[in-house]
Length: 218
Ligand SMILES: *Cc1c(COP(=O)(O)O)cnc(C)c1O
Image 1 (tube, rainbow, N blue to C red):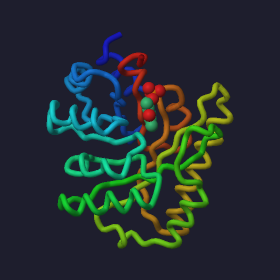
Image 2 (tube, rainbow, N blue to C red):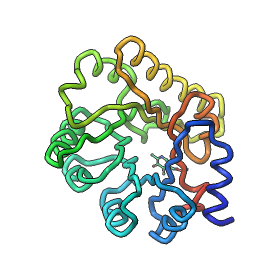
Image 3 (cartoon, rainbow, N blue to C red):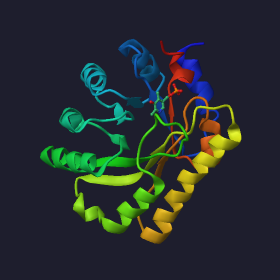
Image 4 (cartoon, rainbow, N blue to C red):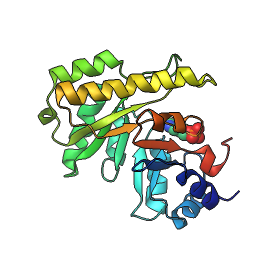
C-alpha cells in the first residue's frame, strides 16, 4: 500500500470535522512529501531537532504539531513556526511557551496533556490538576499561549472497554471545563492508529496517526 492510498483509506473512516494529523516522526522527508502531494498538510513530530530540520526542508504551508514531551530549553527553536503544541505537561512549560511566543509576536495554541492511561510511562497532568489549574488561572495570564483543548493517550492494550473508559475520562473533563469553567475549549486530541475509531466515538476532534499511514516504525 502507498502512503497516498493509506491516507485515502483513513480519511474515508474519519467522522465529519475530525482533523487528521499525520505523525511522521522517524520517517524521512520523502515520506512526508508523498503525503503532502496527496493533500496532507498537518504533520506531527515528537522531537524538536527532527521537527526543526523537517520544517526547514519542507513546504512552508505545512502545519506542524508538537506531540512529544518538550523540554523548556527547546521551546525557543519551535516557537517561530509551531502550529499546535499537544504536550503541555507543566505550568512551567506553559510559561516558557508564553514567553517565546511573545518574543515571536505570536499566539501559540496549546493543549494540556492529561494522564488517562494506567501505564506508568505515560505522563501529563492528572484530571484533578487540570481542574485546579482552571480554577486558579485565567487565560489572560498567558496572552501568547492559548489553551484550546486537551490531549491524552489511552493505555496500549487490546482491551477496548478500558481504552474507551480512558477516553471517556478525558471527554468528561473537557465537557466539565467548558460547562463549569467556561474554558472555551474546542480541541480534543485523542486517538492513534490502533484506537482512533474508539476515540472518535468518544468525541475526539483531532486524531494523531502514524504507522497506519507511513508503515511500521523501526
Ligand atoms: C507516535 C505517536 C502517535 C502515533 O502513533 P501510531 O500508533 O503510529 O499511529 C500518536 N501520538 C503520540 C503522542 C505519539 O507519540
